[in-house]
Length: 342
Image (cartoon, rainbow, N blue to C red; front, top):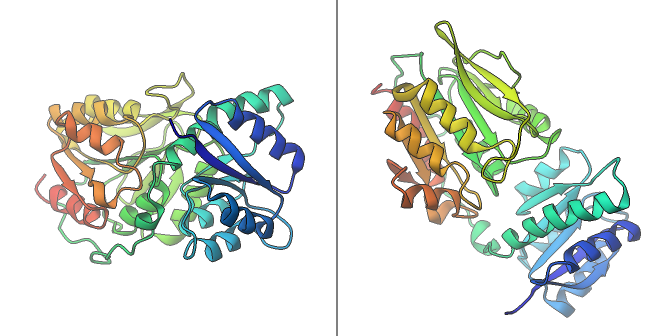
């Protein structure tokens, strides 16, 4: 079986060495080169034709984002960013990176190595399946503002996503008006980044977006993002919907888990819920989406053509969890259309 060829780009030779060791521990991968800056990386791309590149954001002479902007039109390669806690990673995802991992802090050398074996190897394998040239195509936008009148505000919208999800969620939430029922979101993302992601969306959208905290009340015009290290569950307090955020074991491979959130929505809101499962690798969210559909709620799955990775929505579709399968740019309008009938 052909190995995945990986190019490592990082100006810290010590950390780059750990990445090489971590990636090299996986028999399905081969590190073909290590570059300390984008200029070396460009030459190695031409020489080795890697399948995937890992890329640091902060580097001398040219940062990773500028390199991506110059690289992707000429040499579309799946890229996994390696980022310290910075919202620049979302700029990288916007200009073509497939995914990212956070640079580990306060870990021993052995802990860092184990972290890279687990997180970086997984992300690189996922990235190797992505057709970046297709991912970068221009998706025609739908209406800037979704249409449909909402008669009942006592409803819940739930969105789940993974690889490619930051841009997909932005697309959907940008289509929400301030009358959207309270919305909860689980996106697979490390702790710290979820708060920055929420703040970024809050500055771009017509709705208020914040990282969720236990006790937050579901209310129209408010979007709550699951914290990066806690499961988000919908609960009922009297006649009001609220959220509960608690640390726990990984479910369907993740914490936060889309399945945990969707299953709580099925139990608590049932027919008062509309849920959409967006792009992502694996199957997290599929069982939960089926539970929502069986409880009388409405369900949407992103279609293959508009997904960065058609994994989670495909599993959901295959098990009968998806009521409506749609391209990304039609999902916010469909949510409004369904809500107007409830």
